[in-house]
Image (cartoon, rainbow, N blue to C red; front, side, top):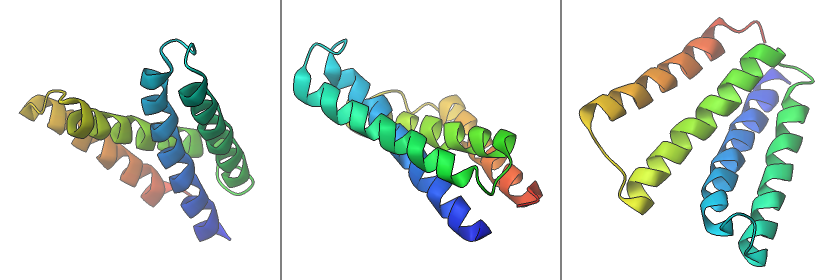
Length: 109
């Protein structure tokens, strides 16, 4: 059951990355198609997060969810939007990933 919650949380984080990137295309929610897609991704992400909370501690799950979303969004920004790939920026991404792994390893669930 616990592994299922972690897998669910992982996909919730991926959907968070999707809606964060989607926000760029909504142009302030003035474009209907991207806005609808972004809202669907938001709903899916929140739903999967809520499902994982039936097993995982809220503090751990929320931190991991936002961490996955943040790392995914930064990587997508680098790959798709040509954002900076500086060593310092990549080091910061590594630190977020290390924190996510640390929370998983130290979790009771």
